[in-house]
Length: 303
Length: 324
Image (tube, rainbow over all chains, first blue to last red; front, side):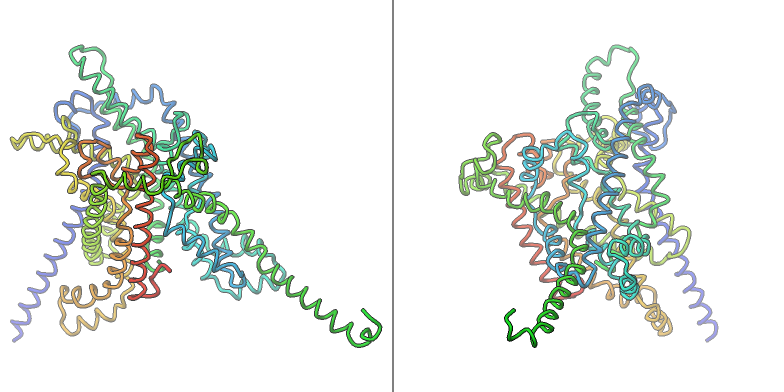
């Protein structure tokens, strides 16, 4: 009897061990698959044109050659300008957007506000139905004349209805006695908002703020539609145009591949640009990812 | 005020006014500042969301830039007839719906599986590494995703074709062969979204009362039985909600994915052209406002009906989770 139990116990421990190992192997494989493209891009940026032509884009580079970075840093003005545009748009857009959205969310969380139901529906309806691309395009280019200005990158994306509704739940969770007490003590709504409601909901606001910043930073679509002037290219759109224009360069280059003159490291340079565009983001990601995860969890529970 | 009533009426009359004034003041005090606070959003949405809704009339007009929206000629349903008589309309509708269905089913399955696996390693340092790695693709714009895919699929230098060469097989011209693209796009979509999606399910799993598992363990339930009889049943509501929400969005394609990853190659349109990419092309490349706006209104209207239906279904299942 005891031997059977001991054996089944050993068996159980064995099965447990094997399944733990399997689970970890699967998760490790998926994680590596997620990281693999990043590795390829970094490796490709560190090798040279000949090596790519011979071995293809490398996972681990066989030849290390920093020429691509030298090539880009020989004239970094374009990438610096694109970085400045993206940073400016992200910081202005996210701060103004967060101010507007949290103001509205706070107002909608106030029970005595008679219009809170109609306004909540007014915001909500924009998430269900939209006029589509064509009317917005005509509005922005023909009537507001925002094309080729920095404003078109900032203004149309300021407000996100879904974010207002999530922010509202943060303010709704504040203890109402606290706000009412402040009100009885004579504090104005503005004061309650800025000095009580905002400080108490900072973690939630920060999470939504990060999502808003990410939306602005990764936006290339607005520039695709409305920006022709290359001084206003944000970083993502610069990558997009580079993808197309270097392809074009590459075609011209293959035509006169016989001339063994100094070759522009087109393929690695493109990857180096990509690395430079991802780099700071990936670094910041390490610090902010937990806030994003918290935000998604909130969405899972509240949404 | 006449002489007879002065003795009796002044006090109540004044107090009525005072009361009314007081009520007005209270209404003002309760509403004025919140109204001002919501004004920026209300105005912004009016300009950038509601005005374009009225712009839907463009689809019923022969829009000319020089004549403006109101000045252009009415043409009724001409643009729609034109759109639906072409071979494009069924193609973009089919691609949008089929790809969304594939994304939905594979996405939910993958996220759920990863969440179940992650749930087994919760709290370890390894778990944090897995989560960080799998969540990273969510942060990358689709322009960069397009470059990633190109590194793998480029005809001359792509990693896949070099592997094929090593195996002694012919290279494949990926960007000219539409038949591979439903699979490629599905993989890319999984790569980008599984980490994000799994966090959602994991959050629900972490909310399950541990007493259920303890009770099951005492009764001798194996890990599989615990997953099958406790975890999955607890996840059924959120899975249903996710399915219904995806069904509601069935008519809206992810423009960034379908535009950047196939690099807008016309050879791939048979499987990669969706309503959103078509609207963009008709508007910007072909300058065919009529066709673009007809397709876009078609998408908005059918999309709206689907969302309302999906929400109705969600409300039947779990009123707390319905959108409205």
